[in-house]
Amino acid sequence: MSQPVVPAPELYRFDRLSTDDFEPATLYEAWRAAAYHSVDLLPPDEELRGTVKFVRGKSGVFGSHQGSGYQTVFSREARSAGLGECMVIALLADRRVALEGPGDARMIAESGSMALYDVARPMHYHWSKGKDLYLLLPRQAALEAIGGALDGLSLPLERQRLAPFLRSQMMSLEEHGHFLARNELASMLDATVETALLMLRGITQHAEAGAELLTKGLYASAIQFMAAHYPDRDLDPVMIAHALGCSRATLYRAFAEHNTTVMDALRELRMQKARRKLEAATGGNVGTIALACGFPDLSAFGKLFKARFGVSPRDWRMEIERPRALVSTNGDVGV
Image: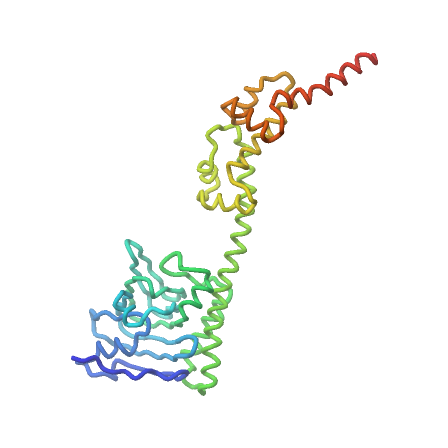
């Protein structure tokens, strides 16, 4: 049986399709071709019933789907068919969807939620009976707006500042869009797409600002932790990252922002502590001071100290003690 030919929709015209419009014998293939723009419809487990409304614009597609439960996938076959060159913001007005990603990745989006989905990822969607609204965004524009690929199966949007406005625009388009003149519909659809992209850009900007604050706070916390534990010879990036509840990569980035490394900063802190102890502990054993500052190898400590301050630990002490001796001698003569 040949697949029914469905005319391409015109730009900025609200189209409405129903499963009642097709003959039962060709319903699945016809509905699959007409109602799904970004993913592929699987053969249904129950009677296929539904209504779709959609409008295609120059910068995106808006639509709604109401009806029985169904399943969709994105696969290599879908890619070869020209699907997947978009990302989707789905507003689950009255249905839920369970997602199965690569490996054991799974999640459930509940009714009322709004999230961004990357339909170009290999994914299996289980849609319950009900209604959802969707906005298809150009894939490249959406990826640039969020600063790269999604970290998970979806990006929740309910808590974004512009989410209430986007939700209202999508619901208004679904309810009143078919009453609008073409130029009015074009203006509203383009505005809705721009609102969505603006919201996604805001996520990136907020994340970047938050990351900058986190980096600054993490660096300060790491320095404080090192100052409290510098005598521990086992102190290293793994221990510091574990104590601060971050990954080593995040810790390394925090120090890179200050043009240093974790171990260089720790070495400098230990050197300064050792210098002060040498100045304060007249006659103290250099090896004991080195060990107390996290340097178990006296020879290595001496080389590091000379490289940092230009003289050996003993010579540094002698330079500090010489003025003290002169002050002491002059004080005795004065008496």
